[in-house]
Amino acid sequence: MSLIRAATTVGGFTLASRLLGFLRDMAMARFLGAGLAADAFLVAFRLPNLFRSLFAEGAFAAAFVPMAARRLEGPGGRDGARRFAEHALACLLPLLLGFTALMMVAAGPVVLLMTGGFRDAGPEKLALAVDLTRLTFPYLLLISLVSLLGGLLNTVGRFGAAAAAPILLNLVLILAMLLVRGQDPVAVARALAAGVTVAGIAQFLFLLQAATAQDLAPRLVWPRLSADVRTLVRRIGPAAVGAGAAQVNLLVSTVIAARFLPEGSVSYLYYADRLNQLPLGIIGIGMGVALLPALARLIEAGRGDAAVHQQNRAIEFALFLSLPAAVAFVVAARPLVMALFQHGRFTPADTAGAAAALSAFALGLPAYVLVKVLAPAFHARGDTRTPMTFALVAIAANLVGNVALAVPLAHVGIALATAASAWLNVGLLWAGLRRRGHFAPDAPLRRSLPRMGLAAVLLAAALAALTPWAEALAASGPAGRLVGATVLVGAGALVYLGAGSMLGAWQPRALAAALRRSEAARPLP
Image (cartoon, rainbow, N blue to C red; front, side, top):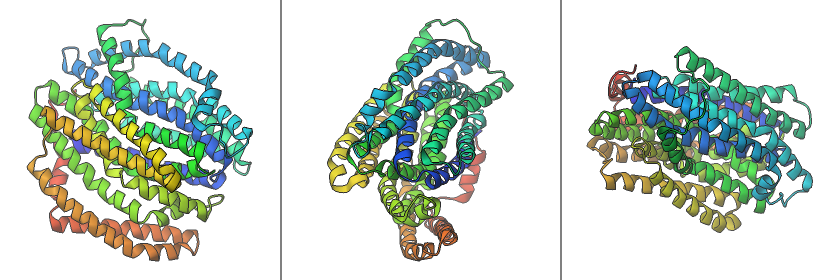
């Protein structure tokens, strides 16, 4: 399977999940609004989401997949990769159980540390956030098991099941809200928190069935701290910081918003980030998931030139898709937020707050995507420490920016600081790869980048002309908001694709060929 075809497979399932996620968020906006219950649930949900991104999905995949790929390429083949997964599971499961139990017991002080006790509200808000955190945190254990199974499947080129698993989370959460619709927001928040853990169970069973069908399901064996497992554990820590920099930055943003900004700020940042995460999930995560095993296998086979070629095509494809999304969110944030979220308890004032945050977040959208494309070049070579170092610098910069900008610009300043830190991370990753000779932009990439930039400028002009019309149409009601947003997206796509084709920024035939062509070291087993 070619890199771009694999990325589009992951991206397609991610798109389905994110669309369901928007339905979930629209229901949350309707039933929770942006007040006490919403802020408490989002803080509770942020904790397991953070650790999921740090330790389960990002870190585990970055450390596990290259090592499993080496065993797959060795004489053991699939059996060797499965045995490695069994030893990893045996040693990590007790640690995960202990950590999950500890976090549930310590939920009170942890939430207090995060939020400062919600100074804008009474003690009932803190108590609710603590209760909800205890309901959601078992999700970390379950999603860690899902990540192990998904990493094993991705290593052998089976990307679909792991990419589809998040769909179950959104389905369960939507069902949870439907079951308690009409009740007060606190009851809805409790149903959502319980639904998070139920969804983790569903995802684990789904991935277990998929691994069993491929004869890859790991058995429970007695823990043995082998040399491979020690190497895996050593790599997971640095990878957790490197792969989870964006999530750490969002946690920092949540802490500052909860401690120092007015009620609703946490929710504005959440809803803006949810929109911003749509292209990031489809493009950045999809490309990163597909790129890591491809690079690991090419490097293991001694095909360094092919690995650099893959990296260039991944950057080109990622920017081709992420630039127009960033422009749309910067220029037309307000009508898009109105169409998706301005219902029920989500007021026009909430729309204004979330739209301003979205425009600021979107300035860093191409950077968020590029981090997902550049970091695998380090991970595929067994280096998780260098991306960690760069991520720590970016996190520190984000913290300084949050503190400096939160007072004059409120939650918009927090979003701007997050975007700026992402670009800093990209610059460090890019320079690090160039310095080591592991990456150099080739002629096609150097040719296409300025042309894509000009196409994006033309898109911005078109959206700026259409946005006042879309906002006026949105004033007519929900149908007008939906029509306006649809026209904006459709017209913007036509302008960007048409301008890019005329400028020669991309060639449709070359893209179609890339979907078919394989650059793998050898056919997947």
